[in-house]
Image 1 (cartoon, rainbow, N blue to C red):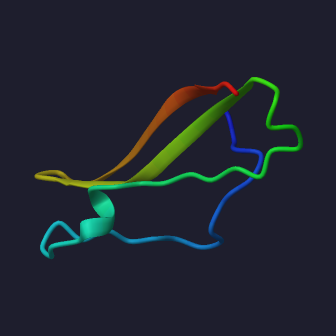
Image 2: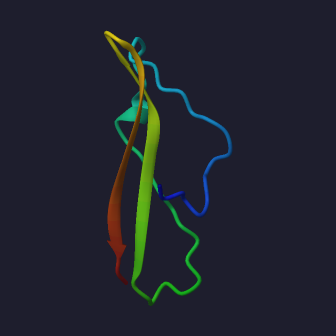
Length: 69
């Protein structure tokens, strides 16, 4: 039930399993931190639809990352 505080970029990005998409292999995050000498916790969400034999199913995942100077 959590919702991200900010979403970048605006709008949806659609990945296609039928096409080679190099962006799927590497994901970068460059947060604009107010003080680079502090520790921060960053939660990255990935949401989407997964095609199954029964139809489309909503899926969500997240990873927590700790940023340290």
